[in-house]
Amino acid sequence: MSSQSVASPITPAPAQTPLQRIVSEFAESKLALFGLALFALALLAALLAPWISPQDPYDLAKLDIMDSRLAPGQLSGDGLVFWLGSDGQGRDMLSAMLHGLRISLFVGVVAVSCALAIGAAAGLAAAYFGGGVETLIMRIVDIQLSFPAILVALILLAVLGNGVDKVIMALVAVQWAYFARAARGAALVERNKEYVEAARCLGLSRSRILWRHLLPNCLPPLIVIATVDIARSITLEATLSFLGLGVPVTEPSLGMLIANGFDFLLSGVYWISMFPGIVLTLVIVAINLVGDQLRDVLNPRLKR
Figure 1: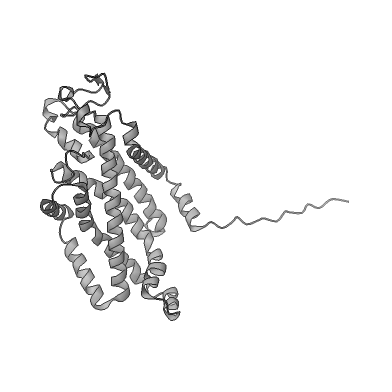
Figure 2: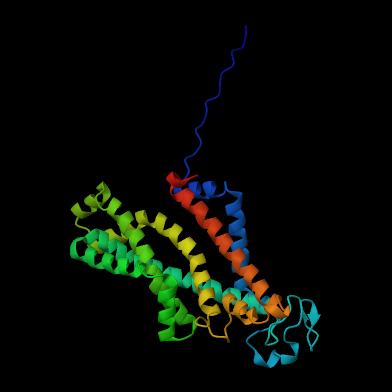
């Protein structure tokens, strides 16, 4: 009697959660993973800067003017090896870059977080309430976006003065409008959907509808803009510091370090500007790679 083989039932694969889907689709791009790893390395180096730096660039007692503009690999007066050379004040460039990266990332992340909060609140309010509220908010946004961001930031810093907090305030002032326009556009699509109408019929408060229902569904485009705007904020801060209107000399960012070596380029002292410029470029490229992949994952219609 011949035995009949019985096919085993096929068990369906478990459904992925939205977070698992985003992670799996993000991991499909090797460039995005490289950018994420590079940004994570920069963030880790910035966080550990006070402990891994060979020298404290803020301690004036440890600086010696005789160690100024030493080439990469030379020894300082106290025997410290300047692997990336020293700047005009005798600071170890490696230590100064680690601390400068710390300030640049701090300014970029904090400025974008504040601009996201203000812009999202303004955009959601404009879309939900409509009428005169929407007209007023969007006219302010249009006026804001009609001026170049760098020009507005220069004017604000000329009035406010130098300082990390002043730079953050200026960057928030020039970037919140991007989030407001994006949040309004996303909220206009969501405000007439069934779940919002159901929330209104249940008698939920306006604030709860805005923050518990509208905001989570408007976050994907805002997250993409925020990711790209971190790189934009770092670039703007570097530009402002290079022009002398950013962070003070006593708290050098990457832009300030590049500016410190600009006057010495023609004399062959390239390392003061070149190494911070390379680090700044790598960080901006890494953030943009992550932002591009997040855009494709969160909005599949934009996939190339």
